[in-house]
Length: 80
Length: 371
Image (cartoon, rainbow over all chains, first blue to last red; front, side):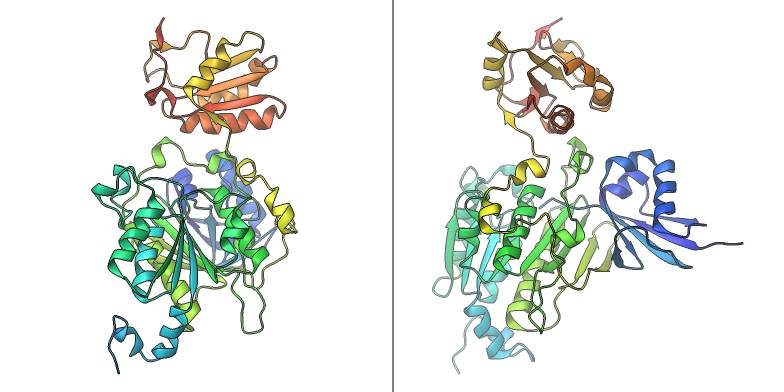
C-alpha cells in the first residue's frame, strides 16, 4: 500500500519551527493524524497557533486527505 | 477636455471617467502610517481618492525610515499621522482632503473614528489592533483591506466586502477565530524586515481598495494572497464563502467598547523602571522579580533578590511564584519578559504581573549590583 503523497507547505513561524518551507509525508488519511505526526516529530510546533488549508481551501476540524494533496500550515502574521 | 494628473488612469479601458469619479468621492481610513500605511497612503493619494483619514499615535524614529517612505530625516520625533498628511498635502494640493488622528485606535474611539469612512485599510503592527479593526468593520459593515508581514513573508486580502447580492465576504475571524497564544508573538530575533516587503504588501492593499471602489478588475475578497520575498513566490488561499457569525465578535457597539483587545491578544501590562523600583521598595506587598536573561548575557549583573529563570524554564518554575502578590519580569529589552508575563498571567490570574518596559537596555534601568 503506497498511501497518499502529501505535500506540506509551511509559512511564517511554522516554517521557522520546522526548519523548512516544504516537506513530504505519506500514509495519513486525515488532517488530525497528520498534525499528530507533525507535533510528535517537531515538538516546537506546539508553541505556534496556525490554521490549515487543504488544496488551497481553509479547513477546520478533522478533514480527509486525498491522494496527492497539498496541506498548508498558516500561522497569523501581525507585522506592519 | 481638460487634462489633470489622472489622465493616464482615466483612459484605461474599464476604469475610465466613472472609475476616477468613484475614487474622488471615496473616503478611506488608514490605520497605521507605518511600513504598510506609508506606501498605501502614497498610492491612494496619487490615484485621486477624495478623502483620507490617517490614524497613528506613534512618532517617526530613525529606524523607521528604510520602510516608512513618506518620512525623512527632518520628521524624526514628530507624529507620524501629521507628517504623512503634510507630505501628501504638499504633493497633491487642491483635490485631497486629509483627516489626521495623532492617537492610537482604542475600543472607546474606534467606532466613532471609522464610521464616517467608506472603507478601511489595516496597516497596524499588532494582533490587538487587527482584531479590534476587524470586529469594528464587521459591526459597521465596512470593507477592510488587510495586510500583514512576518520576516520575508506577507499576506493581503479584502475582508467583509459585499458581493453582488449584498452578502458580506469573509472576515479575519474566518481565518483566525481567536487571537494566537504567546508562542506566536514576536521575539528578539524576529524584528528585522527588508523595507520593500511592507512596500509590496501595502501597495497591494491600496490596489484592493482602488479596485473595490472603482469597480475595476477583480478583488481578493474571499481569497488570501501570500507573497514570499525571499523565494519570489505568490500563493493564494480560498477563504470560506460567507462571513460566519463568530461568537467572539462583540454583538453590539456597546459590547465592542467594553472589549479588552489588549488582554485577549496577549498584551501584558507593562511598567517602566521607575514604577518597578517603587513597587520593590513597598515592603507591604510580596513581590518577586524575575531576571530572564541567559547566563551569557551580562553573567555578573543581577538586581538583588531577583530569580534568574530562562524563558524556556518558566513552566517548570511556577511553584516559586505561589506566595507572591506582584511579579515583575525583565530581560534585556522587554520582548521575552512580555511573553513570560503572559505565561505567568495565565497560570496566576489573580496576581499582578508586569513586564518591565525596555529591559536592561533601557536608559532608566537601575545600576545593576555586582554579585
